Structure formats: structure tokens, C-alpha cells
Length: 426
Image (cartoon, rainbow, N blue to C red):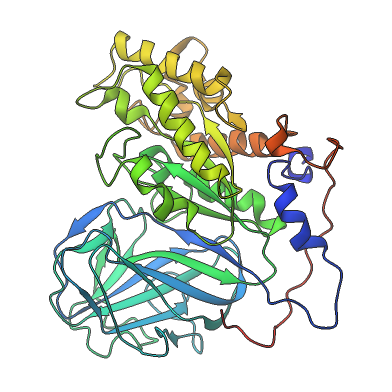
């Protein structure tokens, strides 16, 4: 409990004003912050004439939402014939009656998104609670070429193959097919009494491989649960197969940093957990200095936006098919850079938390789903706790001073109840 009560020292300088500003006669508009994210990981065949009902799990709530749709990896203009949002009713594709809303783009119900671009809806007046499931339904009437998607959703979504007119259905009866990918939707922002968001930036370890599908037990989900009392959102920018130094599954970490992290709404902190695929991939990368340079580049770009950065040590993968003693030595050198290289504002030592003391090259059996690389639900919770401790440690460097003169952090008051502003517009 003590850990939860302590305020996020890494985030406090930016968050406190939002939580403690005095009441005024004409209150400023409530801010936007990211509540859910996924990062594009590739493309799949277009679903001509279909409506995809994507199920996404929000972290923080608010009084309005806006949705980001992506054609970032597409090669042709993407025609979105209809986009709707609704709260999900229990499990399945049904919407809570009365919550379905049609999203617009500069007032229009349809939009064409150029290749390589994203589109953001107008604000949609829809109160959403924290930890709610939101249905984001996308109807694509034409063949718009390869569809930008996220492969490892670990979440069941739904498909109406004859999708004309079905995006507006509250009932899920037409959604007879299921899928485990997210199509087109890559983000949801909320407007309300929110204090910003944290981006979890990484590979399959962050994407959630090894955790139980349809339960939201990835480590960013667990972190979101711990931060909910402070109205801080958590965005999952993990891409299974992603690499730090070169393109792999999706663009490299350096190439996708802006679109998947820095450009998201209300970002206050970035958690970087990436590099194991470079060590075990082909061609392998064994120069620790290259990792250090890449991490420094990520941090410098985040600092330029006023965003603090937590580095996460690379966890063991002994027993995995690609493990070798040489690659283990590289992992140790990279972890030395993360721990003691002075690159990051804070360090979350996931390696120390998850390794087996009897065999430090391996994950503890209770955290290992059997592939010796990813994490069980329990392992995911351990990573979340480790990251939370890093976020709550007192800042040590000038870039993270809690208060002028280095005073101790101030515990914020309980979050204020949300009030309805005069407008939910931008």
C-alpha cells in the first residue's frame, strides 16, 4: 500500500498542476489524455464491405472520447465509410443500449485517409468509466488495399462480413465472425479530469505474449490498474517482434517513436523495454555501444518534448531456442548500460525481479509460460510492480527535480470528481 500511496515522483512536476489548480469562475477546458493504444505492426488483406467491431480496454475514463484510425502501413487511400463507438455490454459484440455514437471527421461521417497517415475523429460526447471496454466499429466499403492492423491483440473482436449499415447496430447479431487482431484503430483519447498518461514502449514482452487472452493481464494493463486512483492513463505501444536498432515486425523503435509514443495525447512518461529481439535476431546485434546510442537518442527526443524516460532491463531468455552464451553476455552488457550508463531518468530492473536466483540466465519458473522468453500473468504483474517502483522513486537528476531546491515530493489530494464542461470540443 505504501508504494501505491507514494506519488509518481517521475511524473509529479507535470501532473500536480492538473490536480491542484484552484477553482476559477471560468474553468479551463478539461484536458485530453491517451486512455488506450495499440501500435501498427503490419498489414493484412482488406476486408471489403465488412464492419470490424474492435474491442479495446480503456485505462482512464472521461466525458468524451476521440479515436485515432490508421492507414500508416497502407499503400492506397483508406476509405472509412462509417466509424462508431459504444460501451460494450458484458462480453461479446453487443453495445450498452443508448451509448452508441457515430464518429465524425470535421463534421463528415466518412473520411479518406492517405497512405502513411492517421486520422483522428472529432470529439464524441460519451461518458466512459475507467477500465471500460469500448467498441470501435469501422466499416470499409471499398478495397482500400492492405489494412493496417495490430497482430497480437490478445483480445477477441468481431466481424460482420456484410457490413453496410451495421456499424450503427447496438445489437451484435450481425457480428458472427471473431478475430484476434485490431484493424485500423490505434488509439483512444479521453477528455476529463485526467493527469496525463504513461507510454509502455517495447516488443512482445510489452505487447503481452504469454498472458491470458481476453483478460487484460499484460504488464501495461496491470500498471494501469495501479495508476487508476491518480487518473493516469497507460498506453501500450508494444509490438511483438519489434527491434530497437532496425526494422523487424513494424518499424524500428527509433523510427516509430514519435507516432507511437511522443505524439500521443498527454504523455508525461515513457517506459522503454526493448532490445531483446536485436540480441536474438538475425542479424544479431552484439555491440553494447550501439544500444547505448539508440537509448540516448530515444531519451533525447523524449526530453525535447518534456517527457521523462524509464529504462527497463532486459529479462533472461535462457532455455529459449535462440539463447546462446554469447548472446547472454551481450544481454548482460546491455543491462549494464541501462543500469549504470546514466542514460535514463530512472531504471526498472525487471531482470533482477524475474530471474531465477538458482540460474540467473533463466526466468523464474512461476513467471515462465513455457517458452522461456515471455511472461505468465504473474510475471506480467511483477514487471508492472517493478515499473511502478521506478516511477515512484525520488528523482535524482536536474531534469527530474520534484520541486525547486529538490524538496520532497508532495502527495496529491484525491482526484476531483469529474464535472461536465460547457463543450466537449477540441
